[in-house]
Length: 302
Image: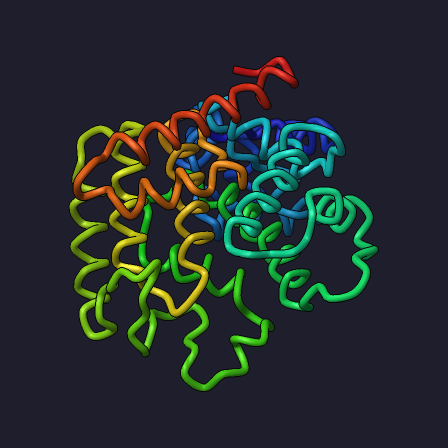
């Protein structure tokens, strides 16, 4: 749903009504009717309105989600509210997801970077740990922005680019930032998809997933397992995969799952044994849902 509260305020300040926009801006009566019904306008129209009122399109038009969790995240992100659900999601998911992949930053250090944009990390912490922490904050922002869009290769590759750009890996000729891998890789001693097979495997995975009439948390978990088995990027697959899961939970009004670093062994076992025993990964992710529910309860949500 689209809110035109900002536009209505501007109209009131000018002493004009919606119908006057047909005369002043040459908008069609159909377009004006869309405003009244809360329907989405073409970007060119909102930019035309913004130019007329000398403001940003975001000051006039705001998309309202019917998912209360996503709506709270968007509102707190936009208002830069400290100490809320958005703030805690940023710190907790970034710390846990990066720590699962070997980051040396503690949760307190991650929180300090997010809250103060300063460092107090002592010796021996790789620069990439800091960069990928900041990048993960931005990746969560991107997930919140595009949450309701259909999952696509473009979104998945953009998440990888956000995470890995400007890191040491990005200086390597063979490391494709924001693109599928060029060299074979192995994870946990297990073979993954060969580089030449990745594009077709990813298209097949996405086509099957997006064709489902309804998506459940089990479907999101299954997609996550299949994505990690393909391992489409040279590095960063785990973090990208968990960000995709967050996006899809927000898209389908599913309580997201937050995998804590302390559950890493169970999580890895679940991924490794998915083809033989789906319950291990499913139970770990459902436990992660309970973790997120406790976070929601802190803010009297959900």
